Length: 491
Image (cartoon, rainbow, N blue to C red; front, top):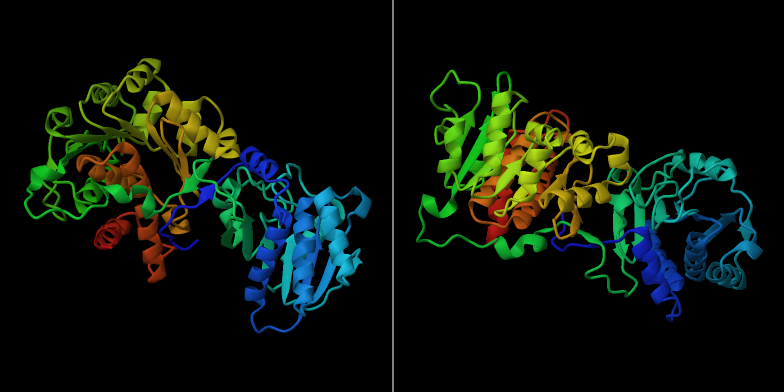
């Protein structure tokens, strides 16, 4: 998905159903609005291409949207072939009306479609309510559609994709475009969703969704903190960022985090490596200040602990001291693993007042939640929200479509970033970016949202210039993030 400046609403199944129930008798109906909006999108995709459009209509309301779309295209002179296996008598009432309207407009319903050249295929088979693998003839149809080379427009969600969590458990349509109605769905944005939905277009159908569910992350989410720097400042104005980590064989993790914090504007960056380094300064970044890890809680105004920390007794001692730190703390990597094994440390974390940020990947989240990685991935939003509430911290559940959750129950899905970020050190850079903003007195929520989105946009900019995704290195995103951040400040 391209970077956008405004956040978009993201609603789960129950929230969408409540909203649809509230507007069940609106005029025109939500199905009419959805089908007409998607028809306009289809016309854009057809552009000057002549040919025939194949519309696949399923047995539910998603099929009803498809009937409306097909009718609108037919009335505009488009050659439309509509295929459906559904019995008209078994259709829901709104879908039955849409079916009758299609027939009244001169349309026909075919029980199958032949192998011909299509200009566009519209997937209206199954929508957000599907919770089982698609089987039988519908599965065969999906296989045939996925073998085609023309654009494929999915209505609301590609058939076979779980709209709640992005899981694929059977045949699923590989869409090139998806028209999402009312609000985006979590499953379009996380886990397997981005690999199947193609280009996303949201049609709100005139409904207001502010304050419901979650939203995507965009600069608008943290705009109040994106203020240009005044002239009359000094290094103390932007805080002292401290990083504790870098045990034997893992010093690079701490260095990456420290370099990221420096490049994103922390006034001073203090690096406490657990393994005594064989150097007295970083020759590439001599501005970094090497200190004893135990001294950082007295010198820093914001602290990060975890990158390359290890799980030694010394690491546990540093983590315990970090729980008593007077400023905000970022917990990453082995700090999270140690925390998961120690209920006393968990209690100390929940009692911290200055604010905390946790950045688990799915395996770390599973340890913290006392469950499996599969269960975490089965509902990434709920997992992040539960961890944030339990530990009274902002939580970033990393992965495709990273989830940010706040202790108050707000949640966000990040849409920036790419597969090039699946490499060692990216999490350390993210920790440094969050830390830098905390040192500059951003709130934990604002710092987390901005850093997560910024990191992804930086990686996207690098890929756009040919520096990835294959072979993209974590350290390369640091300077790119600085450039993007300064562009935001200017705009």
